[in-house]
Length: 399
Ligand SMILES: C[S@@+](CC[C@H](N)C(=O)[O-])C[C@H]1O[C@@H](n2cnc3c(N)ncnc32)[C@H](O)[C@@H]1O
Image 1 (tube, rainbow, N blue to C red):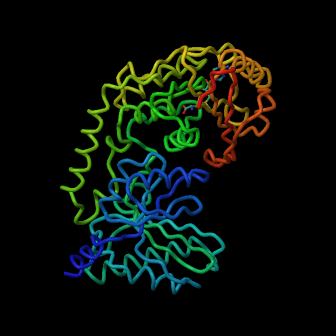
Image 2 (image 1 turned 180 degrees about the horizontal axis):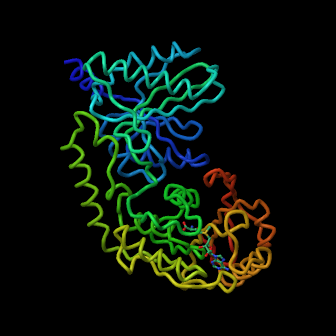
Image 3 (image 1 turned 45 degrees about the vertical axis):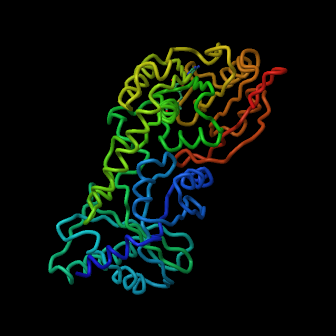
């Protein structure tokens, strides 16, 4: 059968994948994927890598920074919609899904000569549906809300790349956040993990988030410290594809479970505070839902203006304070709050590092502390900076 043949070919290495991520985290994602054994090529908004399906399953299960893992099924020169149709129609889709499954197609473009991305989407959809009908006598239907299978395409000035999605729901959805937990502008989980990676936080170093909100940064850190793979409590798109390798997937999950048990004993010093008691309660609920015991994160209500370190050992602050645009400081006076926070950091946190994500480029001036590093990052559509500050105290600097 043609499907068997394609699958055998697909299982032979190397397959080409694209891991998408928020802009600014490409290098951090590349490092993460290298640690999983992938050979990588960072690109804008993601990382290309090669390997077998097992590697793609592992990347879905273990990557904290990727938004999605895509399998590239075609890449070819493309100048118009007819060429695009031919490229998509030449892929053996029936090796991956059947007519009983629902489908969604998404197309992105940068400097593409094609006139309309909507029309390009339609042409790819037609190409896929025509091929499946030709092969099976039946056609898959379209479901844009909860599709079984997602097809992505990216068009640049010369080429079209067509991908099959392996993730399903985006990977920042770890499966622990409740639907009604909107928090006050919670970070996406993969951005929170990216902040920890750029800051260079490692388990064992005390971590404090003084604007913890629903606790996203703290939950990511505590899961890292406890060896909990981010994808252990969710499903993935590849589980719905034909000839999904169930035994392989069970092995990979079992291995991740074993690592989690082995890391259970660590006592990480991870703490967070927020001025809003409801946020602290939500963070507590989220930590439990994320598989963390009540001792994994120390949480308390506190005002950043009178912030004090949680212990004697210097560590690292990682946070995203409000900055006016999306969400305001508690009493509405942003300038005075940042000035007071700066003072609290300088007087009480000698030897600590502070990493602060903000859409406010003037933040260092407001805190009256000069940054030692800054990384450009997008929080959704908002152009942000992650500022790194070294808070000095003779003889007690964080290495
Ligand atoms: C942008 S949100 C942080 C979101 C969080 N990272 C998350 O993922 O849920 C900013 C938080 O700062 C808190 N906040 C505002 N003013 C504060 C203050 N003076 N001291 C401490 N927290 C404050 C808000 O209650 C809010 O939860």
